[in-house]
Image (cartoon, rainbow over all chains, first blue to last red; front, top):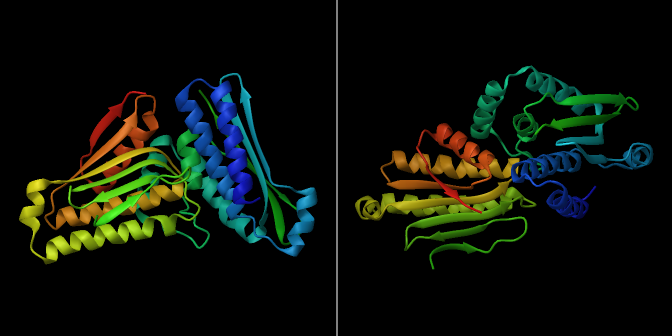
Length: 158
Length: 136
């Protein structure tokens, strides 16, 4: 996954949404969620020789599915197990919050966020929860002692 | 011109910082490849300018004009949100130092999320924004 690939995907997505989704707000929400998902895949893809081998069986995944008026966004990427252990509590915490609590967390996080070495503000998951107003579904498949495959599903309802 | 005039690209917004006309405007989409490289020089320039106004004791002259910040963003990603929040915190700091600054937050008629995020920002810095709806 590279920035050029992401730009290409987002370009096609814009065209798809323009033709298939007339509600401008929904169009923008799908686009915005997609940017956050793709950024996450890019930022967490710690490339190593060892991992290159894994990518054959565990390639990055990004699927946008339109079901009636709703959208499902599926993502998947290989991550280090040590990062998995950091993400699970963050996802569980978000999934336990009400919408009002998520909005409060967003405001607090905006004020306190630090930009990481990889350029992220750590706000992506909060934005996903805030935008979808639904629980984030996720799953980790252990590949070996070092890596897992992180699969996530966002449900955007009309 | 003292200030900045950065043209928009597909991924980064147009930024105008016109000190002579007391205006800062950011317009378009913000998903720059490196948010830090894009926003840090802007934040630095704003800070330096406002510090100069205060150091040279020109607050009265500055406040007669009233500095306008126009946020006319169509879309920004979560890391840009952090930098926009940094600009707003800077405005808050200098407002507390006595500078007269007004914030105008534009949003499209169809874009309730953009209005909501403006309200979040306004809450965050405890400064009321002027909300302006654009028909598209």
